[in-house]
Every structure is written in C-alpha cells, then in structure tokens.
Length: 208
Length: 116
Image (cartoon, rainbow over all chains, first blue to last red; front, side):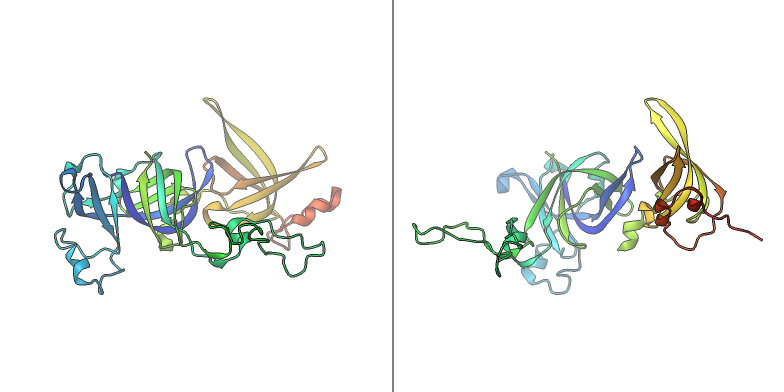
C-alpha cells in the first residue's frame, strides 16, 4: 500500500465527532493520483512510486521533456509530482491510481505543504521579537530589532535574525487525525489546520 | 469548491428540531452519558441570542435560578440534543437580548407574543 497521497486544500469547517464534540477539520481533495514512475532498489537504490496530481497547471504549456515523462503512464501531464514510499513495490504498476482509500478514520497522518506567503515581514512578526515599550520615551523605534552585533568581531554574525521574506516555505504538521474518508468524492477530512492557502497542494503521509 | 466544504457538514445539520426565536422560552432535553448509562437532563430558559453559523450554530438560554442568573450555550446541531419544546413565544424588538442581564425582578420579564 502507498504510504501517502497528494491533495488540494479546500478549506476548514467543523464536524461533530462520535463523542458529540464539535471539532475543527480541514477538507482536502486528494487523488486519484496516477503512478508516473516506479523507483526500485535495482535501478535507483530504493523503493518508491512517483505519483502526480492535478491537471490544470501545465496542461497546455507542458514542454516536451515534461509531457514525455507522462507518456509511459498514458496520463495527462500533472500539475505536481511527488515520490511516495510504498510497503510493497510489486503492488503498483505505472498508470495505476492511488486513492484516498489508503487511509481510514482514526489514522494519524503528517501533512506537508507551503505556508501562506507573508511578504517582507519585520522581526516582530517573523521572529517573535518583543518590540519596544511604547510608553517610556521610545522614539520611532517601536518595532525595531535593536542591536545587530557587538564591537568586537566588527561584523554581523551569520544567522542574525532580521526582517525579510516570510512564509511560502515548506512546512510539515505532524500527528493530525483523519476524521472522515469519502471515497466517492476523493475527500479527506483531517482534524486541525494544515499549512497553506485554499487550493494549495499538500502531501498527506501516514505517520511512521 | 465551497460545495465540497459543506458536503459532509450538511448531513449533520439538525432539521428535526422546532423553530424558535429570541425571546421565546424553550425547554431542552440534553442526553448525558455517565459510563454506560444515558439520561436526559432538562433545562428551561429564555432564548437571549441565536448565533447562525451553519454547522457551528448555537443559542444562549438564560434563566433565573434561586435568584441567580444562569446562562447556558447550546450547539444547535449537537447530536446530544434530544428534544426541544417551545414553552411560550416572546414579544421582543431585538435579536440579542443581552440587556436582560442588567435587569432584575419584574423588569427582566419578556412579554408574551399575542397570536390573534
């Protein structure tokens, strides 16, 4: 069985669980993901399947090298590709679909995606700096980062936290619980929040 | 896209419960599980607010118990609501009756709605 699937974030809502508690859930449209390529120990040194998801992205503009990659699987070029570990590589053939039925309710999963881009953010938002007390004579420096070094090395050390681009980075949320699996509509409902924007691509893996 | 979002929450909406409005006095029976046993706990009070948010809708009941104001918030679509009975309809002019919290005694009453 494949140990993961690619999906698209639909949004968040709430659902009553078996205990009657209203819990927050994220709805993810996942699969069906065709197997594009098989990676085997003999050929690549490890066992995995490469699966694709989504059509829209490069449907028309797919260049020859990219679209040629999908020829063997006889599927349209996918918007996104991902390698997934499998329990047994013999189970899958190229062109076969991975569907949401690899999961069942109560399973624990790990969800990876790209976080929402925050643009050029200051140190308070980006690194959680405290900022200055606005009521004690501070002038024009309420959200500044303060000193960026000492006199001795005469340079700023690498890794100093400063303002800059924030978000739109890969992020993984662990230990989320599957609340519902809808095989008919290829939907997964996961308890809690997952990274990224609505419509963003996610990889949902079984927790190891 | 939003239809996929509502697909499963819609199944959980309670459509079997009677309609009521702010100002009404209702009696609600909630199912309480104690170990293996199940019992029903009644609560009677005036509806002072209804929050309509789809599956997450809720309402607030207020009553005066031994001279102390008690408010309870119930999730509208909870599977643990067994029964709702509208005891009397009230005549009020606003949707949220939070002003009742500042009133006591005879001032805190809600006039009954006349149905002619």
